[in-house]
Image (tube, rainbow, N blue to C red):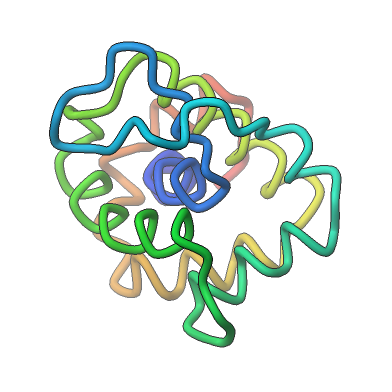
Length: 132
């Protein structure tokens, strides 16, 4: 599901998943040490990031950075992401799809309202065992 892969990048940044070892200069590396698992397993933190991305709450600097780069990362297949960012994004996508389906669907609606990325990322979804 392309939305999932694309959204993962959004969530990646969103969750300050920017654990960028050799990230390109386009995306920031200042949040490299944030632990994605800590965020995913803490409903309060996860909800705060979610609200930020959905324009329903305040954003941390990490959340603002994520919102800034999500559309670009989704559109260009995360070509400016590091390998670490890609792996973390996949982790986030799988987690949201499997455990926070309502949240996932809302993020998809916001960041891919026409579904144009769904087909583009279909193979990635299948690889992650995500049903479209």
